[in-house]
Image: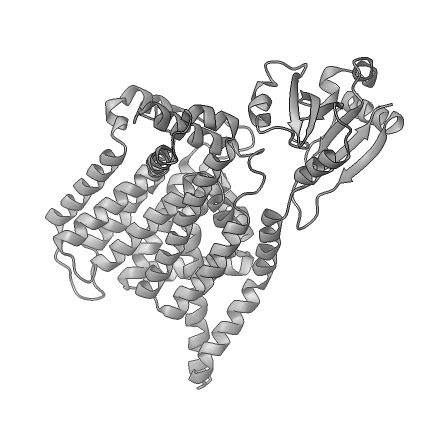
Length: 508
């Protein structure tokens, strides 16, 4: 039932602003898959993530989509369906990863802890946001959860088949995102750790077979990593860069503090983040194999990402489901212990449910708001609808980047704005109206208001973001616009409506 609700929420917001706007990382993956499908070239010529578990399925889907006209031509004319297909694939990966998380929790802890961990994971903003985009995070989460489930099950019956299956899952996870290589840590631990107080005979030969299976699975789905090794090295150097605006400048200790004090509490809440940390520490101290394997993965991941010169909130995403699981399991254990002391064991289950609801309530409110934001039309789409209804035919208007989408080609035109700062002129059809649209990065980049008026532009569409600080020169242009122009429409962002402040002005 919970997964059904999650599927409905994810699918309700998966379209967002397609076909007009999409994320820059989405553009990389979709365009690579289109090129691979259109030209029959299985070499992606890019290995940044490496993203093989997204690129190849997408390329296959694009080739199956029909060939009534050339694929590249269809993509350029209407890119929306191509991006939507990638987002739907990622939703499927995300739902599969959540189902596997429940299986992991039930195996390592119990069913109540598994359900609590699943609920807390669903309420985290990062998993939902990345499930609704064409990125490699959801695929990595799916295969990462598959590998961890295989590691936990390996303790019951360490057969050759299970070792090979675990290795294959690890290889596919690494083929999605490189840092899932840390899965080798819980896998090796599953082969070597004791079972409680009983010594365990090391499974060295089978462990080596599993590692070989991981390498083989990676190379099977990412063959050009070896066949085009020069390009792979170039991509890896780009991924290993030491600077990026807003994501660099911290030491390993600073990175750890960033994740521990900002990212994780921001996702789970402060109380649940502390409870999860206690659960990880307890798992390392106790002899229970399942929780210890999960804790090793969490610690190995954070150790790796903290050593990087960069820091991104999304890099903590693989650990979030497991931290949610540890939080739920630790909370359940604490409630059970308290009930036992009070000799009210029958109250343990309802008390756990009440405590979980209380701690998850703020996240549930935020999640509901985020679902509405993703499902409702943004301010930019509302502005487009107003222009379609209200502008006269053959109108001339100037539109800022990030304002109302007036063409499916807007993203491609935006990319060229840095090369042609004075703007790009395009005739576009908006419904049954033919408009002359001048696209600019912002109004001040072209000049004062009189320059637009002299060229016959009657309307301007502006976009203001709260996080952007204007220079005095830029502010002067907007003050002139407010004093000399007439505001025809205004679309403001809200708690449940995304987008910038979009204003439509009549120039006078």
